[in-house]
Image (tube, rainbow, N blue to C red; front, side):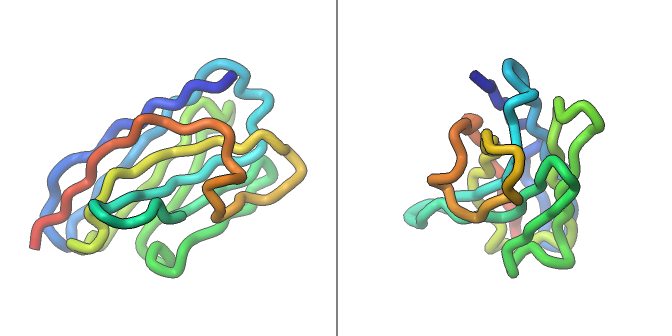
Amino acid sequence: QVQLVESGGGLVQAGGSLRLSCAASGSIATIGSMGWFRQAPGKQREFVAGIGRYGSTLYADSAKGRFTISTDNAWNTVYLEMNSLKPEDTAVYFCAARRIKILPPSPYTNDYAYWGQGTQVTVSS
């Protein structure tokens, strides 16, 4: 089992930055890739960014050039650095872990076995 806890959300003005963190515990060695997703009110959960064990990254078009996903060396924590934030980035942000090591990060929620509780990001205009 893997437990994930997000932090770092908050209220920020448009154009500002936030850094989200996701602390992983439990069977970290079984994690193959991790991802960040977000869900705005009344909308489906959508992929933001993902990172694989071997360094591969994947970004949603909305995140490219503004967001950066990274991990510490031990894969205890995954980060999402968000810059140039827009009001449309407002959502609850979730981190997720995928178990298969040999596959790259996936943009599909069904591919992730473990999820955190989420952290709220609000961007004011």
